[in-house]
Length: 493
Image (cartoon, rainbow, N blue to C red):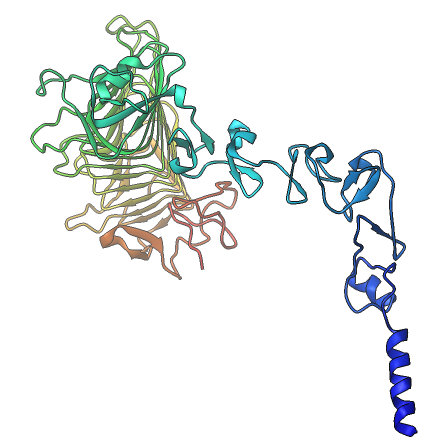
């Protein structure tokens, strides 16, 4: 009898603890207060209100809440059944499509806007590779797929007479010929695209002039001179500009008006590499970022040289120089990394200058306009400025010249004012203040071109406390410590 009584009692207790199907809870604390072991929701389109599952009436999803976002037949439900019920409560207006019971922004790429044209698991996002786009061309800067109708497609074996379409691509010289106001992208297929002109011993460039705008997209190599003139705009992304013949130094970019006083043109390079391919402007507006400019076979030219026009000379009526902006770019070799002349100006940040020859890292010529270089690293080169009224601000830069026979002074000349720079070797006090002289910056491996700082470097946390630069050469955020670090690379513990 006692055993039977225990069994009956146990069954009675089990029956008493069976969960009421109308009871619900929405948080751990709420469930504990109701004596429920887990968060318990409602089924059948019901919503949890006051720990009871009820049918909530609605006229639109805005009348519902996060627990049951969708208004179906005047009741709030947990899952949608039709696009007309989208977006659900609290969802963005872009979530217009019902997929698997939830409102999402897209079912396919065609549902997405041009600015975020890839449909990825119900969410529109920007493209991150050419394979994301039906046109095979992603603008990585904006994350937008470039429309096929705006692209001239180029292959190394393409035609010289075709329309440069995706199905019938052309050669590079043909692509420049078809560029117009609506077709302004040139997609280079893999390989090296070569145009030497009718006489490879003279300057026979691909020409972009007037109001035309063109963007060269890689990844690919281009062996061809480029001329940008009279207000034209040339952009290049993921391109290698090269001159493969070490005896032919004619390949180059030249950006200038055809006639003195003509419209200035614009050159914008990002993720571009040049090999024995000098860039020049006279005058020109130039922007170079996240790029590498190299002298491969010898140093018999300046990697980037800009000039201007002088009133009263060659018909010029005003003084007008080039405007040069450089960021996160390496200059390796050359007579000079950069050469500035005649009212030209430079704003450079987060860049590397190394192995320059007789003209040094930056050659400061005649009548240079107010310029600055900041948070950059100079290795096995020097920076010599003329004496005179200051025109160049050098701030938060790091200089180390350890080449055999290096001069006692790595920087000199009063036209360049140095502030919060670290310079070695340096026996004379440079113009400026708050500089650190003669100390080893402690690079990770300068011989292989790795100018990251080692722990304990005197460059760490010693930049101008008022500096505002937010990234370094690699894109690492500044500062990583109490203050920003001197040079192109922020030390990251």
